[in-house]
Image (cartoon, rainbow, N blue to C red):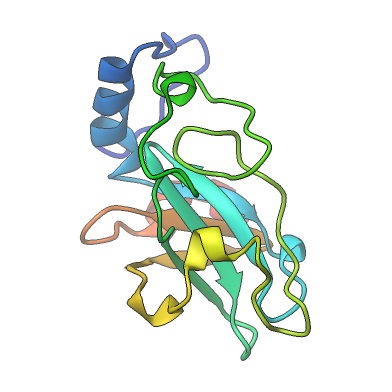
Length: 163
């Protein structure tokens, strides 16, 4: 498999933390990952939680209509350490947050462009201190990458991007 090739259907599914760490290193830190669609973020300030590999991220609609992607302020959501029920290598159905160990929640709507209490677990109280992540769109799809330097999204999508 090339550095940017995605696994095909029927590939073994990683089940342990070691396998997930290898998957993170070999795949999620080298490709663009689709994390949602623009319609999920209709208004300025709206936020979409996303998990890419072991990384808790989010995309937020900027006041100018563009998108900003960044790492969550706390990588385990509002947990200070990884809870035992989350450290087993399977996604946990957490009623509170989206993080690198839980299932992602739906988009969170801002209140008149201002962050809500629920958003604070992703952006904290000073969003300027967040580490940005490259974000691009292809049609209505939102992509993020953890690769440094970012690969070409057009090359990754190939003829699919033209469609």
